[in-house]
Structure formats: structure tokens, C-alpha cells
Image (cartoon, rainbow, N blue to C red):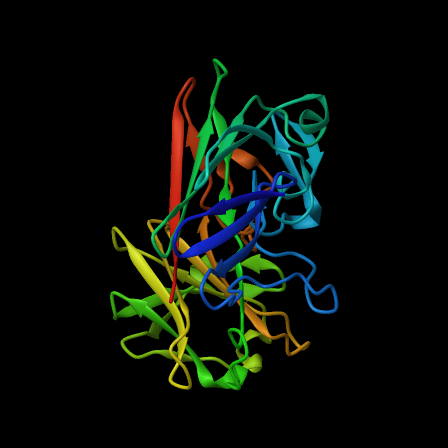
Amino acid sequence: MLTLKNDYLTAQINPLGAEPTSIKDNETGLEYLWQADAKYWGRHAPILFPIVGRLQDNEYRVADKTYKMTQHGFARDREFTTTEQSADRVVLRLTADTESRLLYPADFSLTMTYELVDHQLKVNATVTNPADTGLDFSFGAHPGFNIPFGDATADFTDYVVTVAPKQTYQRIPLVGPYSDSEHSLPIDLSRPMGLTHDLFEHDAQILTLTNPETTVMLSTAADDHGVALTTTAPYLGIWSPYPKQAPFVCLEPWWGLADDVKATGDLATKVAINHLEAHQDFNASYQITCF
């Protein structure tokens, strides 16, 4: 486990999956990240690559050849190499190998950078295409946050999600595990979204983000603690497992979506896919502010 520390926070990053496993307040010891109780969900904040969500029949095609890949891709279960480390910053990298090419026939490099700056954990992902041909992929993050935070007596339903800018967004419904982008519906987020477990009866709430930057805050009037996630991602998933009534919620910046209900299986035409030309880089970032 890799430990980052500054004057305010201590974070731990697991090289397996380059996954953050803890963000603690140094003064109070308050833990912000979900601690992977397998009774509810056995992960903390996995990386989603090279797909977000689920493929139809867990299959896709590249150049008329069919490949199998399970939900959210394989990066979350692969060992990353630590390439740089200091007291408050670490860089980890995953590159294509024989094992990955059985699932995903592409050369790639995925570099994850984590840095503590004051009360923030800053996260940057860089996807590099080292090949002479194009690269199709999705990327996302899946951090879970404790509800309540610390020893607070607040209930799940005492928490709200506030989205800034405050406006009406488009919400993409899911049909089973698949996106139904054609039937997006407006959702008024000029006021905070109250949390209930029933909100997730049909899986994640998925928002289309059209602003240059969006901040999503998880907080309660019952105490002063919460988190804010700021990102440039085009989509945001809000999720808690239903009907388990789990004591956490995930705020998930996504650069990609699950297969559409009308997906053809061709990776190049997959909904919300990212395409990198030869020898180009793609950057994705988000920041978690703890208070």
C-alpha cells in the first residue's frame, strides 16, 4: 500500500488497480472513503478502463473479431507499476501485455497520478496510444464515500447531493445494465437531490454534464463534514447498491457509458467512446475535496 500525506490528509493507494483505499483527516481521523465491506460492495474507488459499465453479452468486436470483457474492464484488477513517489504524490502506470491483449487487442499506457494538495486529493489519468493505429476506449472512476462520515448520527436519508452549476441536467436511464440515451429525461438540480435507497432501485443515476467543470457535493445539515468532487467529465454516475441499504454512495466521473440498448457490438461505434489517434494522449481529471 502506498501512503500519501500532507498537513491535512492521509491517503492510501493500492498498486493493485491503482485504487485509492483511504482518505483520512489527520486531525480527527475521520475516514471519507468507503472501506470495502464485502457485505455491500467489496471495493473502495476502482478505476474503470477500457470500458465503463457493461457490454451487451459481455462481448464486443474489433476488426470482425469478438472479445469478452466484463463490467468496467480489467484495469481495476491489474497490478500497476509505481513510477514516481514522494510524500504527497504518486504516479502509477499500466501498459498493454500478453494478458491484456486477450481481452483488449490494443497497445496502450494508462498512467494514474494522485496528489494531495491541502484538503484535496487530485487525480489525473493519462491514456497514451503508442501505436501507429487508432485506440478506442472509455475511462471512469468509481469512488465510494461513507454515509454517515465518521461517528455522525445522521442517516442515509439526511444526506443530499448538490450539483453545481445548479441547473436542469439530462438523466440517462438504464434498461437493465444498458444505457438508453435516446430517452434521456430532464432532472431539475437547481435544488439538492435528497438521497434515499429507493433512488437506486434501477441502478445508478446518470447525468450528462455539459459545463466545462462540474462540482458534486455530498453533505448533510446534521454535521459539518462532507466531500465535493469536481471534474471535467461528460457524465456522472451516482450509485449505491439496491436493495442492500448500504451506508455509502459513489460519485463517479465517467468518460464513457455502458453499451446502449441498441449497441451493435462494434467498439469503434460504441456510445460515448473515446478515440485516440496514433501517438496521442488523452487526459481525464477529478478532485476530491474533504471537509
